[in-house]
Amino acid sequence: MSETVAATGTRVGYVRVSTVTQTLEQQEAALAAVGVTKTFQDKMSGARDDRPGLAAMLEYVREGDTVVVWKLDRLGRNTLHILEVVRVLTERGITLVSTSDGIDSSTAAGRMVIGVLASMAEFERELVKERTALKREAARKNGTRFGRPRKVDDAQAIATARRMKADGHTGKDIAKYLGVSRATLYRLLAEGPEAQFIASVGTP
Image (cartoon, rainbow, N blue to C red; front, top):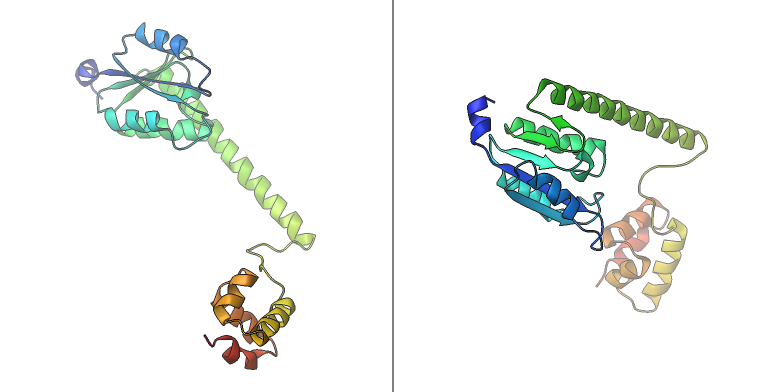
């Protein structure tokens, strides 16, 4: 991005507090002091993905603009999310400035700090993947089965289906009572010695 383009851009602010009882005055004052002319805001936890203020800000800014925040943690719920926002801004030719952290992505020092954060985030991502894999392997050795569990026991489903059919219930009613689809009910019946029962359960 050239100096000419950067000079013509707008300084756009984004501020956020976690609860409606907190105020945005400190953040807004800090942004106004560095020339921010338009500000977007959210009053909600950073852990939430559906932040309309952040979404509106990302929609509003254009190449050559500068996004200013009070602190980087205002942008996202964690390091990975923050860096995703930074990546989106960088790819669009938008500068990011964090007044409290002293970060300016238009400078070499600012880019270096963001690069360090990216390396830390990647390390964190790999640690999470490694821990998850180790936990799954340990669980497997202990006999834990992964995947979606069946809502009903096979034998119980067959016995209940027979009783309900005898009482005049339809296959649709039986499946609804057991909390499974009709296809699942038929499959359970077909897997055991009760396959002959499928036709009678399937009648309306």
